[in-house]
Amino acid sequence: MKLISNVMYLLSRIILILCLPVACGSAVANSKTPKPAFKIVAASYPVYIATLNLIKNAEDVELKALMPLSAGCPHDVSLTPKDFVSVANADVLIANGAGFEPFLENIKKARPNLRVILASEQSGAEAAKSEIHHHDDDHPAGHNGHDHHVSDSDPHVWTSPAMHIRQVIRIAEGLADANASRAALYRANASNYVARLEDLRATMAEQLKSLQSRAIIT
Image (cartoon, rainbow, N blue to C red; front, side, top):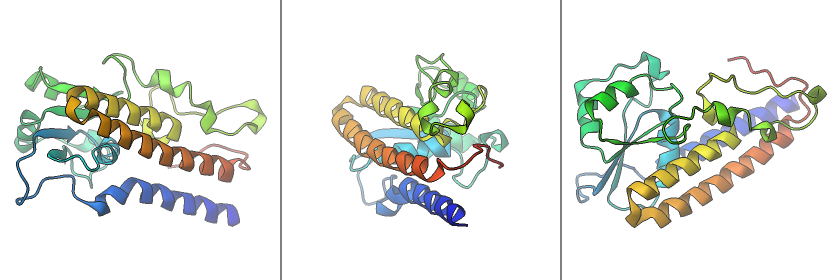
């Protein structure tokens, strides 16, 4: 029971870390603020939360979620004309990539010149597969010398703290390149957020190291 309690505590910590920026302030400019100079659209919830942490204290930056934050899998989402208007007005689109957002191809066809940051891919071509094979440090040693990890075709990269840290860094570097005047801020925020994720990662490893199985049923 103590182990279950510790796991539940860790899950609550994850939710707190991910959602804290929402409580601190809105990422979308309101009617009393100037028109945003830099507009970002996030294609899915995981990259929306990561980006929310990265734009903290960035003035005149607007972040919008392309799909409803209450939505489940992007495979269940169909883009509306309003969504395409949001994309048309965006300076950059941030997506998880690795096949997580199936509507990306339609967006690219509609706006072929839109800058797209793929959190799970490099140079627009390398799938998250290359990352998935290199996150053994998320799983403590032991367990008969065998590591369980995300399937090669699983796009849910953010479920691993180590891989999500790589996503955060990719997004930050993409934003720094797209919006050079705020590059230092994006990178500073990335460093702070990564430090929090590293703390969470270490705590999770410590709490879960006694488990004999790494299997998770969802």
